[in-house]
Length: 196
Image (cartoon, rainbow, N blue to C red; front, side, top):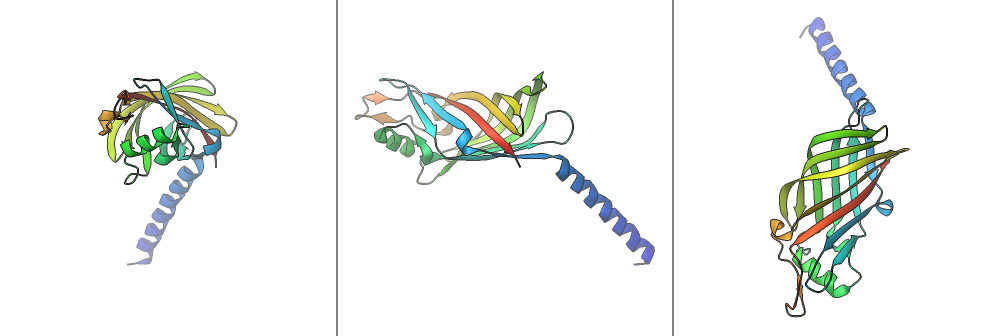
């Protein structure tokens, strides 16, 4: 290989690496703040409504380069046995239904951003599609949420309603089946992401 060819290859490699460095430098990375975030699973039963609150969740948000608000990466992970109702018997039935011995986490991974509408300079309405995995079953779902910029933080807030049986989960029962849980549940979240 002659010196001219070597020089051209070197210039090409430097150019590509420079472009990559600019892209990495201009994208904005955020990490979920567990203590400032909430995620609830809300449901019904033949006796009363119920709520599970998560104590251990993590996630990452990346905003793409450019002036417009644009999400390029969003993933969330919830430790299944960190869901707590305040009642140990109900928690035990929940973990059994979620098959937590084999599936320790519930996951959401962004597939695509369907729409972003600007509400104000710091507020947006966002519609995304992603892969949700619960009890080892993965489904593609759509989620609508609001995104608010507060200083160096991004707060995502929304709700998603679906059926447990969509994920192969048998709605938990208690007291020999006399108390039955409704199939439909709602996940309500307010996730705070801190800029890195």
